[in-house]
Amino acid sequence: MTLALGAARFTLGLVAFGLCAAALASACSRDIMLGADSASGRGGSAGTGGSAGARAGNAGFGGVATGGGSGESGASGAGGEPACVPVSCHNKVYACGNCLDDDGDGKIDAADPECTGPCDDREDSFDVGLPGSGADKCTEDCFFDNGNGSGNDGCRFSHRCDPVSVAPDYPPTGSSSCAYDETTKIPGGGSCAELSAAQASSCADVCGPLTPNGCDCFGCCELPANSGHFVALGGAVNTCSSATLDDPVACPPCTQVPSCTNACDDCESCVGRPEPLPSCTSGSACNGLKSCDSRVIAPCAQGFYCITGCCVPEPR
Image 1 (cartoon, rainbow, N blue to C red):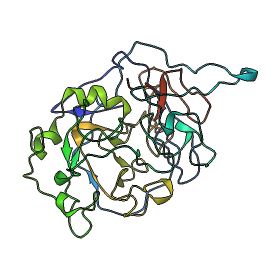
Image 2: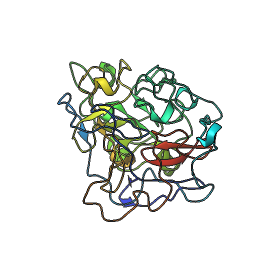
Image 3: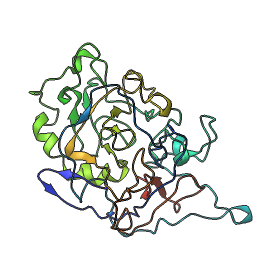
Image 4: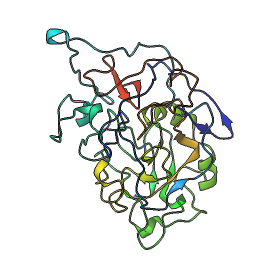
């Protein structure tokens, strides 16, 4: 997992957390899992979004500090099979961590293509189904924690900073009030350029472990991996799913923010790419830490959640 935070690059170990990991397996051709990375093939041509800057190097955003638990598979149920154990997000259990098939597609929690993590309350859409950013819908914070809007994650940006937010559709929000303006001043301080270059260290600490490989912390993801097709998981209509990735209305284009992008590196399991590239020679995708396969029941130990091949500690 990787990040550029300011001009410096750094490796976050898993701070008092659990473990990262390797590749996950393929599913149907468009069944692109975030929590488990399943699916291959290029995305459609919809939208003009892209990466706002160079990809991060070999260290940084999305890491979790070593220590605090192994993340190994959980308890066994009847007959020795692993038992699903609910995973919470800040002491609340949402749809993607409740051990139920909430949308009736036969897939539970991290195995569901639309589940982005334990703070996701919708299995039928990439939108997390939690409160938005309030009166100013243009302001962004961590997409993958339990609710957008002001909070403790330290991630700050604005849709007004996104070059694709122009008439007539103003993606991804659909609102002319969020029209692109590079001179925008973001609530809390900072310009588009400043926050594109550097986020607060708390953004990496809190949101980094929850951000899947191939996404930025604001929910702009390259789907499928390495396709050059960037979509906002929580667009104006909140209906982006594996089946609608080529629909620019359901999955509007966006531009990734370099300062909190968890880049999809060669040796990682990523959104839309279940396995490391054949050119990978460094071994484990997460520096030898615990990997997971979300297709199985209880892929991680109790208190951990499988996000793009990594057993990440539940947020507390």
